Image (cartoon, rainbow, N blue to C red; front, side):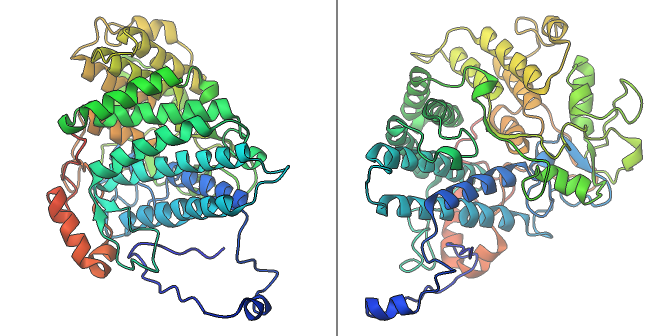
Length: 481
């Protein structure tokens, strides 16, 4: 299926031929339909989204390095925060706009154009549109959380806007929350059903996902003074609407053992025979200090039973000298999540500490549930002793509540690089290492793609100025700590 980037990554003129309908029909190839089935587009967009957030191919996704869970061996540019040699920011921008948001937008258009019939009811149409909308909001929010201001209002209309303007990130985020509020009540039946690779159309599960995403987004912006009311409303309505209550609710894609539906980490590391990564000392040292039992499932024991040694972050590390990724992570069938129960519990603990009206009052309880959910999801043992560890127990763990929640959220987000990095950006915890070679500070955002600088220069320049400079260390509007 031909893909079209709708921003200035690739400026393509979409020329439409004006012709009489009869002649137009004669020019259509029945083997290459002009209207792709909405279910196919939706399924493709879902897998593209999960693949992009899960991949560890350094050409497309370096979030595990930004979260300092992994570091590199032979090639160390990415762990030293070189975004441009491989054009990494362009790859993420392109994938999200082209293979996720565009496909979802087209699926929406085709769903809206489908006539109501006994086999396609109004409830089915509305549920499908709601599922599309929730995934669209997820993708848009990710772009905002990655770059800041981005093309939004003009981004999907190349016939009118070849060079789209960049919209204010806070304004986009506010609109995304409004869209979520409108979509969630419309989830009344199976929607895409079997074509939905996450929940197989289960409406109750989709509502929990929508509300859990809204909770996450509310927590993201809760420290922004101008958005405090919007954030608190998002958090309270998410909780009252019903968020995840167990790992069974996780927004997870189950991969298969045969290509092309294997986990991309297996493709990147096992199928390709690569030995490009070891576990970073940032993570290993932290977990060793806590005697964290999850080490045996997060990591391989290639150095000996119970021995874990992280490679110095950003150094040109010897693959054989340091701890490797576990076989669980590199299994071709290892499922991948967009949002999970552990994450939700830490957000509920945060909301409780803020005493936000209508949210739970027990921060320690949800903190403990977050850790427990992580152990259960990974099949780790030793939970009881870990929770009694004075360095872990909520009452005795060092630091403020933000330090405690931030540290354990970062640990629980192992193998979910973007959320590990964002946990650090949100709570400024734990302390990260400077990369050994470049010594550069940890990025707080992706810089804009070079193609935007070259092809959409006027709008790029305006956006760069608006956010305080197109730098890796520019803090985004929600990053207030």
